[in-house]
Amino acid sequence: MSESNIRVIIVEDDTEIRDLMRRSLEREAGLRVVGLFGDAEGFLERFEELEPDVVLMDIGLPDMSGIECVAKAKPMRPQTQFLMSTVFENPAFIFQALCAGATGYLVKNAGQEQLAIAVRELHEGGSPMSSTIARLVVDSFQNGVKTRIQDHALTDREKGILDQLAQGLMYKEIAAKTGISTETVRKHVRNIYEKLQVGSRMEAIRKVYPNGY
Image (cartoon, rainbow, N blue to C red; front, side, top):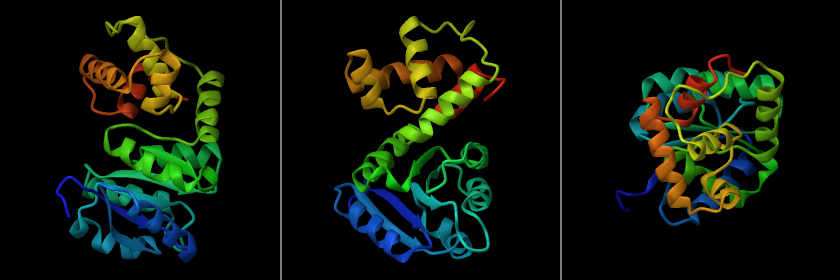
């Protein structure tokens, strides 16, 4: 295997769904499934040893929930990115997962073709979310107290891109909406991170919108 492969672990208690995810990812070049687990405890025992880049984590696991598992695992290996995969579309679950350390959130009916796209974007520094989840996040922003973007020396283009990042849009979706290339979006995002002195989408959102959702 190439060293450039993205190492993925799947934590899902439903055997059929777990195998479907595995087959879907293993068809993709550059992705390598290095671990399959049906519960949080088994995953935590081997998490550091397997050195994953991305973990697909179900919320509704037996005994310990996926959210609790992420909260325990993230400090053990901060560089690993966690993508929640679940049937739950409850805002409380979404924000609990994000606070625990997850940086992406997909509902299981999003389609297997979206899985590899989400894994790649997460590995590249994005925060993929299903459209229904992104809508809930947007509604939470709009219904809460939202601090305006100011005093960060961001250009109008950068402000617009940051707003779209906050809505959970993927880079290619932002590119399509703004009429620029995906690579140009990446450059703008890097500039945003540099100006805000942050290293991820969620850090940028928290810094610009300190009052939260």
